[in-house]
Image 1 (spheres, helix red, strand yellow):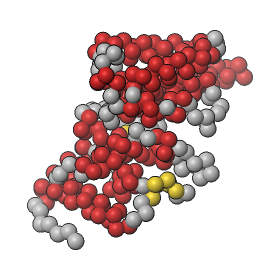
Image 2 (cartoon, one colour; image 1 turned 90 degrees about the horizontal axis):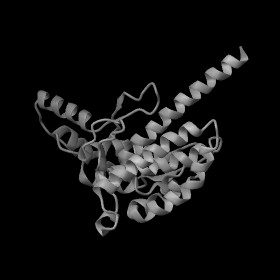
Image 3 (tube, helix red, strand yellow; image 1 turned 135 degrees about the vertical axis):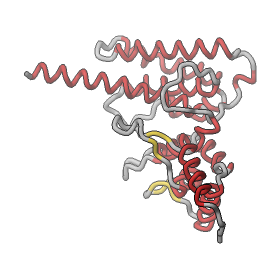
Image 4 (tube, one colour; image 1 turned 90 degrees about the vertical axis):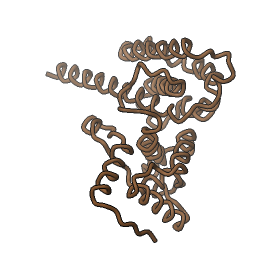
Length: 271
């Protein structure tokens, strides 16, 4: 269905351009600096797939073929990702509850949708790296950071319960659609978990760090956005997922350092 003659040097340039535009980083300590480019099929499933026992699947094969051809032609011709793909991924990351983990087969479709969204949307959102950008004052990015901090605070209280759904996850879509309104409510719901961390000697370090970051983000929002103005309570843009992801990775690193410290202390006691 598709035929195009193209100079080899131009094709090479277009392929390299695609690699540089559409990638994201690994999640483990060993892969956190490595770039991964999702395949066209993976992107289409994340954009249009529905959750099944096998993960994300697209029911209509002809539709999948059409989207595959659109992406391949964009790669070859040096064009940007088709807008419909970007829009679908932008919508999907705002509806996290649609992709809750299936414990029967350990398929976490949310992580797949999130990874593809990060890879595909990073260019248009102007995201250069996966590191936490404390100078970024974009409204969506800042509220994304708050979502991660609220989720991380509650999850830290229940470290042995991996299946627990936090308030931040439950209120994900509502928070994105009306951030000022839902932030006040979610902040209140998180307070009891903060107190549990504060009075837990083993986890007070986490309380100190997270509450400091919450104050930092809140101050940035207050400095740049008047919460009383209706336009500042409008739905967040897709850039929120980058603030969320960067802050969550910072939380994971903090946990990893603490776990390593606990392991060393335990080994010293046993010796």
